[in-house]
Figure (spheres, helix red, strand yellow):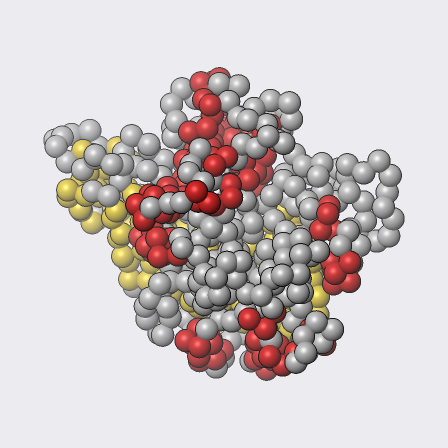
Length: 554
């Protein structure tokens, strides 16, 4: 399908046009699912809380444009009236609007007006955006957190085995706009699934991501989203040639790496543009996000993440690189408020590629560990930690048959888990970390990386949950491995198998996302199917998008 036909199918003649609201069923976040105005901006704005009383609204202006911008804010839609706006003139490139002290109610509203600086008229406006504030938890006694991981949209690269995409669709795939194209189609036809035999059918990961975003926008009312890594592809150089970029194995200049880091972070912002104006979206560093301590892409990835995707950092001892931080919801740090602790298990491992060779080699680094101990000293009704994978895992590679390095695979948390594989399990940092979390009252350690939904009790009240994956493909070869079976159990039935494999289903594969619902006295995790365009999974075919596959009480 040509790109113009793609847009025709979606009912649009121009990229980035606002999605017509009347086609959507009502949703609590906003009455209108607008994406962004591509003639003025690179992507939609991103709203993000830095703490319970501070936030930042990030705008990325289209190259060559100089804008005047008005920012309206208030505790209700009715309060967004003329004469109350912040005004910015001559805006180019990036505008970060910092807000402090406005979040005393459960909701916050804002909108933007903008025009070319050289024009005396021609103001345009965004839809009104509604954001649930951290204080919403205190007043309503409930909050919802969407946990997603491993969308792997860079897997949509051309390869001989999966096919070569029509060149007219490659630009949208590379810049991320193809996810918004799919959203427009889903908006007009929620039952749409691309035909496997077409060019759109090759864009499996982008469609799975769009399906999840559509569900979140139309069926959920979350307070925030946490992405547990492998979102950007900056650290997935093996996919770059299939995306039309240079092969890093053949050599890249510093300018190449800088340009690619910029490209992939803009792509990330663009793909999530339907969510970022309304929902604080925070990112955990994954092994394919370019910030591994042993990766050449790290300084460039950090540069553009902090520029285009600001997160908490630089205060209360948190990293100035914003790669590990704490989110204290409700009224801030202290009793009665949930505490979400985001860790970076990638940036402080400096052995050369392929990285840590043994489970004992993985580390959070001294500074991050010291910071973590201080943060865990705060009292909180609910404490949770989030990282991409455990600090160790079974002694194998991405494929467990490869034993020359340790990839961080599996739910290995305790000394007993590591005893068969390490001469001294006490030297595995995850063992030390597990005890610290248990003794500090952490209720659950969430992770991604393994592309399934799975939960286990670790020690005491501490549980561990792998949050699932938005990928369209389950890894059947992984599921049949001996270590996988030992630690994750039986996959039950893979849809493409001609006969049932037998046994119970101990975990669920993609495509799905987890939802954590908190009240002062309860915490419930649900795993929901995100897309049914994936027969390459162990999720039963009768389960539809939005169906709950498993629940875990914490």
